[in-house]
Each structure stands twice: as C-alpha cells, then as structure tokens.
Length: 306
Image (cartoon, rainbow, N blue to C red; front, side, top):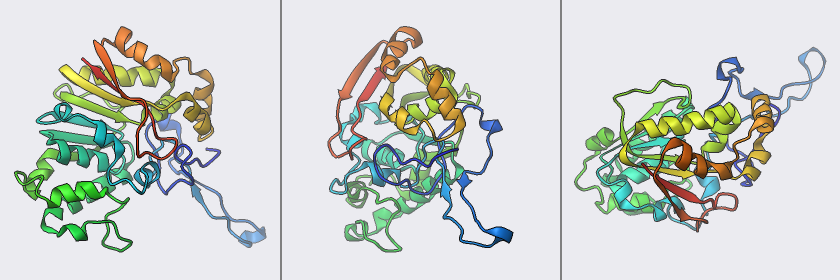
C-alpha cells in the first residue's frame, strides 16, 4: 500500500476502503498509513490517509457527476426494458445510489447491490431507509442543501423529485425494502448460490479494481460468474475502465502493482472474450461518451445479451 489515489482524475479521494482483491486473505486489514514522529513518541503527527485498494471511495458519486447535472448520466441512457419488472444485480454498488435510482426510475421487480466494503453497505442501507421516507417529504426539502438533514453524497435531485412526485405511488415505503436490498460480498471469491438468477446484471466502473486485485484470472472469473447468474435472454451492462486508468492506480498496493505488470487481457479485449469465449450472443455500445460526467468518467457503456 504505497500511495493514496483519487478516483481517476477527480481530485483527492474521499474517506473509505475498496472493491475486491487477489490475495485478500494475506492483506493487512488496516488501510491506514502515516504516523507520528519524534523521539519518545514526541513530535508532530502526520495526518493519516486511507488507501483505497479496491476503489470504493465514499464520495464517489460526487466526484464523477457534474454538479450542474441533476441525475447520474448513466441513468439517462439506460433503457426501461432492461430493468422494468426484472430481477437485477448491481456489482460493486458503493453507497447504493445507482442501485436505488435504477429501482425507482425503472420499476425493477427486485435489485440486489453487493460490495466488498461493509461500511459502504451500511451507508447503502442508510440511504435506502432515508429515501423510503422521501415520499412523505415536500420536494423542496429533498433538494441538496449543506445541512445535517441533506442526503449523503448529494443524491441526484431528480431521483428525489420522482419519489416526491409519486413516481413510486404503487410502492409504499415498506415495499421498497422488498424490492431493494444490499449485501456485503466479495463477488469474485464467494461461492455462487445456484438458486440466484437475474435478468439484468450491472457492473459499472468495477472491472479495473477486480483486474488489479485478482489479475487475469479474476476478470475471467467475474465474466464466467455473471454468465452463470444470468437467465437466458438476460442483459449484462458493463462500464469498463481504460488501460490508462489502470496505470494511474497501479501503485495502490503491492498486489495491484504485481498484477498490473502481469496482465495480458487488456480492457480492449473484454468484448472479444465475452462474445467468443464466454458466450454472449451480441453487444451494443450504448454510448462512447457520457454527457454530464466529470472528466475521467465519460466512459463507454456496453450491453451484452445472453
């Protein structure tokens, strides 16, 4: 754990931990470095910094979304038929804001968000409880303000507006908990539950962190597991990070550095692998560039069909 890295080119990282890694059991559990100085414990202490070896930054949404945009730009380009009345899975859900946004905007039958960081899962559940009460709060109170009452990470105003305008009028706040759920999970290493099947699986800005932490074996395992969890006719939505992004984050840990130097399956080969090796029948590139994303986050979105 040599350096502290920000999410892409988006400035200093927020406080948190990360998204999944090879050799996880061999890692030290602390993500802190830095310390005091001086003889006998005396002297000025340096400010401690967290190292985000898995990429799960707490203020991730704030860093990737332009402040002038009222909604995560990815939600604007997603199609309703991918989610409406579907069972969905969000891999690397972070604080759950996209997970919740997908459920409310597109009326998922169910959606599960998983992340390796238990702290982020706690935040996701907190966000869910808070949003479950928004349909009882006037719209003006749901807008972003710098107050103790404002929602964390500036939940997009439009999501709040949809709730307040009765966009979930057929779903009371108790039912939301039946539709949306979160679970702490190391997706790459955990054993698959054969009873779990999904119509749509979302993997947004996660592949780099799996690749850096588990290498080529990890990325292949990710794709194979997604294929097995998808029902026939299912959809896999991926937002891969470019190789230049790997280079910026290669020193986040010794494991990442080692994997970076041995990776042979580059991101531009993912499409070929998913179609020719894994077995997806077709792919659509939904967009080559996202409008409303901060520089460094305007990545392509690819949709694979089983």
